[in-house]
Length: 459
Image (cartoon, rainbow, N blue to C red; front, side, top):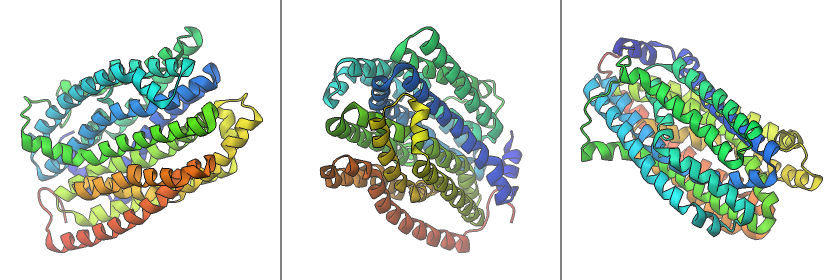
């Protein structure tokens, strides 16, 4: 796809058609990944039992922290790449792209090595012992060993969308989900590899998808091309500034998950941790839908911003916010109305005590999704428009400061207080997000009055 094709996609398409063309496939791509995560939880719960499910729930936040390093560079490089392409500066775009790939592999190797060595210490610190700790350590170490390659997946997805390969991104994510589910099922059901097989199936799927996704870039068939990387301090600072909100959000969010999981293990035992895993898996389907939709339109927002089309930025924003609110409403309805069916999906033989515990947790946790969509979408806009300070502030409040404050204030209430952690933090974050959104809209109106379209943009 050349620059004229990208211009036609991001500049010429009406906002509604752009949303349908870019956001929906992007949301489906993330949904495919989320569905694999969901099937992963179902397979672990149904084939390995409650202890294995709790072990995966304890280990997964640390895996996501490693992926967050790749996501930081992937998101951080996507913003200057998109803006550079909108300005017609393909030389800078290619250099940022080439540097980003090398940076992600280096960070993946560094963080993966640290996680592999620290896995036993981490589980001991969380209070995990016996079979629970053994399974969690195995799970962590398989992911850690594969991280130099697997961390590239989410950045490759971004780069495909920047080049207008929306369908290619969708197909790649669908392949990853289907191949990963089939591979993991085979390793668990036929080969009985346990936690090792559960982790290895996903890693094999990620690594193969990375190789397939990078192939057209290596062969020079994309708008972005590999060039001899020229990494300067200024470029590194630009990438890190744009990607830090996503990184801090991921890492801080997983840190809170670890602390909350430890509190649940202390207050309610393995059953409470397993129920928390259910909440994360079900919420993990909705979160990627909203994130994928917002993330898929970031290249279009950055491109229009670089081309001076502020009016289109505002229209795209309205479409994302409306769709995100609709998705959140569906999530609230499911968690409130059919919690027993959600439990059966993962553990058909769960006893009544477990179901009662999960039923109350689902209905309290559902309250968070009444407003959860607002800070998520506002964060995406701030990132796309290179507002790193505001984005970092919102991200840290959303996933670290407010959840930690809620944990301290609500833990004395027991399990009910822990289930209310997310809803309480979300209400506070939504208030801040609403203020930042209004401030952003005022700035955009000022830019619209004082800035004329540039490059190839059309009036």
